[in-house]
Image: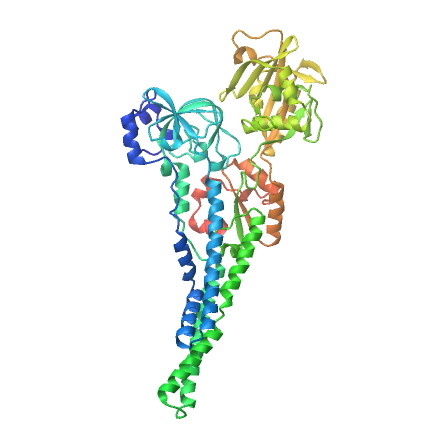
Length: 590
């Protein structure tokens, strides 16, 4: 398959994958491609059997020494009680290790057990719904809001399409997608706006795309390949125990050898030579068995097992017992941002109206045009119980209204939507026409710069007057101040009309608007993350944040969390800058 589909025109992609945008693949093509590429699924590392896991527990050097000691105790010294005790300790140690690993694997498997989503594909000219595992390269996939993208796609149609890619790129805001061909030969994953990637979520609009990669050939699959190919290294504790075991063994064997030789020399002639050799050998073996700390592996295992239980109470899964110890030897913590340090949930933080910027603790009433516009020009679905479904930006607006104790559902019932002009990535606006008594309320939200071009009036204290250049400058300054704090800013406007539109378009609906306000949102930091970073710094641990989000947003979050101090701009490195660093500079500075 050809790489860099993002810079190829759609007909070339269609031709290279031997498919048809209008007809899709036929049954024969699907069969051959399934045989060639297999299921559209992520392959995981082959699981180790329970027996092999049990055997692996005996590969530790100290355990091997203990087994040899047990054999010598029983066979040579006839100390079968000592031999039995040593073997019980060894077996209990192995059972504990296997038990912990199995529990961890079961917990991880439970996280993976998500229902396989279905995909809508065009085959033989007909749209079918099939399990996503049956999707093959060349399939034409249809996307709409709420879908999980089943494979990597080169988009051929994008109608107001937005896809949430935070799990893959770290971008906390859904990405506006397009079917345009990108000209650059090298484009970062997060900037490939004409591509849709497996396991990401469609939050708005609809689209179509040609499958260019499935299973392990997707971007998610590449990550899985890297994870499956990672080398397993021993923890510092395990290395130290192995080293201790070797040193003790050498010292014990040396001392036993000395005792054996000295005994032979000093007791020579007191008894027959063959009996003396056997007696001194038994003494040496008894000494070796007594000197070997057979309780050490069991004690270490029990302590680590207790550690994993403590971690489990804090909702942290530890896969391997010795991994607990590495937490105490940590020098640097590298963390993802979206969903780890932040809540992965857009939240309103500032609202600007009537010439002032307010925080979320400021009370806003339901009759405020800014509130009315953000609720009415909104496609969020409110489920029973108050669950919000839709674009994270839009759901944050409804949540803000909830937090202001506004009866959103009653407001929507009183002002039902009659018409709309859907969001478009080119004009960056969305408008709805809602019933408003015996008139109609036009609610508009979108990019502040685009909105201001269509604004002619401003509402202050319920009075509508023509907007002045000074007021426009104040609005732009408020927008800039929010943007500097890494807030995503939306403009809000409205107008009241006497009748609906015969043909609602941007040319007639989104003109002569009344400015209502601005609203600033961000994916806020987790409160516990800030405290954890502070604690890590007090312990001398460096914290590093890694994210695919915008540089300004990432820097603002890092400053709010305490990872960066104000003025440390040079410590923010983009992916492009990172690629240009030499290996020596990287090791020294990063």
